[in-house]
Length: 94
Image (cartoon, rainbow, N blue to C red; front, side, top):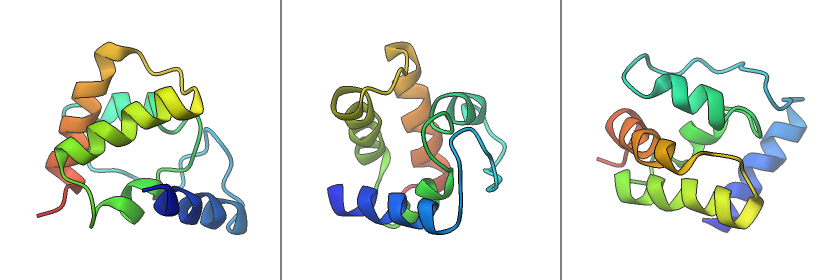
């Protein structure tokens, strides 16, 4: 997972993505607002598509918690489950 994050970060830098800038549109569904609000604050939403082949809902929940605990993301604990559910449902490994 660390490698995936590093790849996503490198791509974001290479393509000039900036925090808070939404170049990628995500699927509209329950929880999309929380993803835009929380995830896009630190990195491009390209990260979702880069990791979608590898993560199911539990994997997404672990990734969100890693962002909080490992990288200091200011994501409210109440938003973790809805974000993971949204990502698992719309971008999860099948």
